[in-house]
Length: 101
Image 1 (cartoon, rainbow, N blue to C red):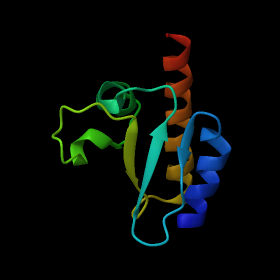
Image 2 (image 1 turned 120 degrees about the vertical axis):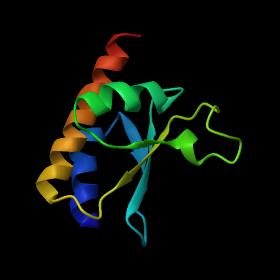
Image 3 (image 1 turned 90 degrees about the vertical axis):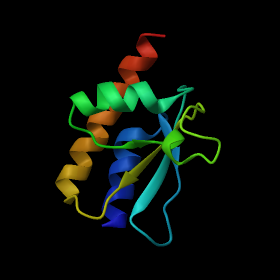
């Protein structure tokens, strides 16, 4: 599944985000380019598009109020088709956010 997720990320997020393929586990961290804080984007816009990601600030040792451009995605239960759809939707959200700046 990791390879399918990375392939979908390459197809949809290139130029919009940065990530590294994890060597183990079921999560991938994604840095959203041009996004200072991922919370609103993820908790509102992504959720409304049925894209479930966790804002990076949720994992910060400095507390959840710190700004973070990162999100954490899990690919353990999603099918390759679901992953592709989710990352395509995330790309659209990122493009819309960039256009609104």
